[in-house]
Amino acid sequence: MAATTPDMGKLKRSHLLHFIDASFGGTTPKWYLIGKDIEDMSVELNPETDTVKNILDETSFNDNGYEPSVDADTYYANTEDSIYEKLKDIAMNRLTGDSCKTKILEVIVDKKSGSYDAWIEDCYVKPQSYGGSQGGVNIPFNIAFAGNRQQGTATITDKVPTFTPNA
Image (cartoon, rainbow, N blue to C red; front, side):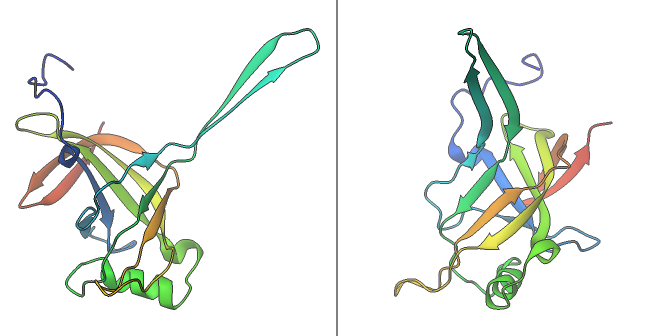
């Protein structure tokens, strides 16, 4: 991989992009780029591990995988955002289960041009509250990754990604 990746040095946070499919199961994805008004956001991997020491003083390590999630703590309601109507619907109608299910697309822009490494996965979007201070109506939401992760590549044209899974 190093041979095909020009050295870009230290990546800025803007080189790690997270998109949510605002169509929530529609036939054509409507990618919404998360990040406006957010100053700090990370994918929490939440590794599930435990260490057990038996009576013989032997230690065993169990690795049960990950339960990744993202907290988008600042989302100001904006009627022009493709995700707004669905966030409003989930929050105000207290939707649950598959009504909150969509896809997340993660893209790492670590090359100067071409296709970028990308991953797509099912997820659930759950607003945590609504309201906020005088600055605007805030609807912070969590994203819980739900499996079916696929690696591939993404091209981005006019800020719209196109994902192609690896063969």
